[in-house]
Length: 236
Image (cartoon, rainbow, N blue to C red; front, top):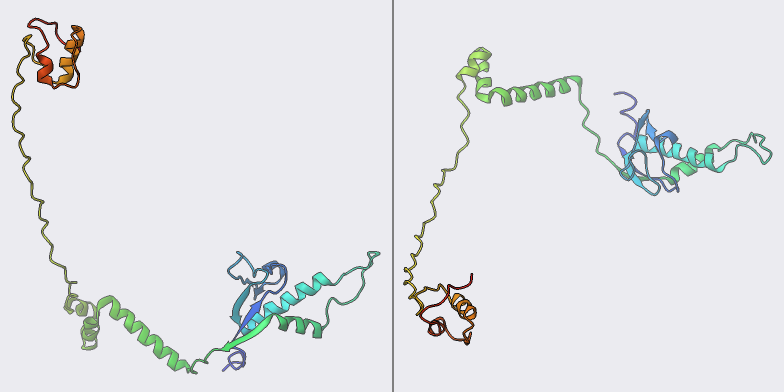
């Protein structure tokens, strides 16, 4: 068992809260082993006020870098005359205290059961066996175990059962209702002037063309009686 697996912090989980007023980005040190770390509020880095859940080692590395970013912003590197002060930007105790202020222990994950190299190899053997079963079917695998060649085993394996298909439901054409035939209209009787008018409006038009007084409220038949035996055709 190597040293890293024996570290008691390997399975701890922490929350890292960026409690500063600025976004913590990879160029400030928001990365682990040269790999950027991001939350969900900004594309790259951890936004101001954002909390992310991280493995212990990642969280502590980011917390140290965030603390250094804060102290670098706070401490002037030169005095009022522009001369370097020579004062360290931080001391170990202050850096450690600020780092811890960003972290909260969350929980410890269960340790995986220790395995020997043989155990890991046997797991891979079973994984490969399941892969073959999924590709050619278990019956073919059993046939190989019985002494057939892989090709013969695949040929001898029964075809996989087809998935049941629901019986097709015949589509029933909607009943066609024959249209109700309309009774033929009786031919219009000609007016006294020998002209057949299709409606009341044509009769009124003929009366107005002849300047015959009439009451438009009367029906078509009564209006036709006002027409003389000889009249001009109705105005279109």
